[in-house]
Length: 296
Image 1 (cartoon, rainbow, N blue to C red):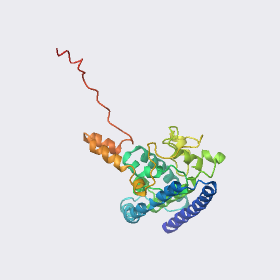
Image 2: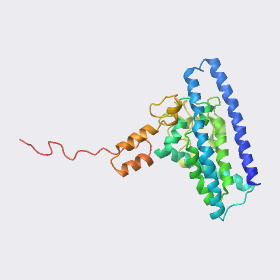
Image 3: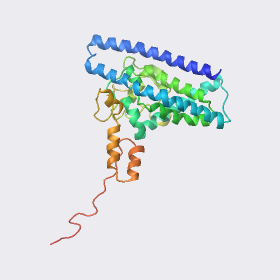
Image 4: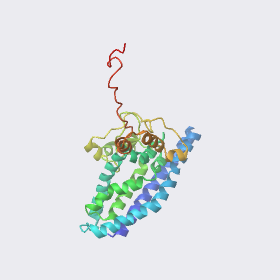
């Protein structure tokens, strides 16, 4: 195997799942049309989902190309312990990328600065294949950075980037309500049922099922939740906009407002890198008037 053949395989894999997703989308649209659910707001939400590809592709064309070249140059110059490119190291790289994706995904939910990007993906109140392409523009950049340790331990960059594409490509078909539970596969793979849970904003579904291809990481690290009742989709906070520009930057106004009111570097740091929703503890007044003594 060569780097070029690996890259071609990843591209073909992504194309196949894109076509599968397209077929599911057609069925979703026809089902909604004949059931009378294909109303104006649902269509506008789909348009908003598709529109996020505009800033995402612009970032990928310019920033991600530069990042990939930089990673290749760094690996060639400093990582002298690179693994050979074989079918076995390729399979291992996909497994490693899936493991790295679990943690990248989990961190994106736990660090507010990264959540500003990933929240775009969660901001739809619908569940359909177009949600699969609903991305924050800098999610790809964060993904590349958080997969960089795989390059440091010896995976060639071509294998890492191919693994990222395969893990993301697989997830296209799982953004749907058309497919029910898949029996024993539910315990091993990230399925539509498992991923519907991830998009749920019900208390028991929040921050669950981070896996990309495999759901076993969630079972190992205590973040697995099986689908019980149909989730309520979207963000926990009251957000239901179908305005594309609002969707692109949905979390930024709140973050800037919190940074503006921060009273110290520590507070600003926590607003950026703490969990979404973090707020400083309110200090109790040291004394009340009664504790200060009678004034008359």
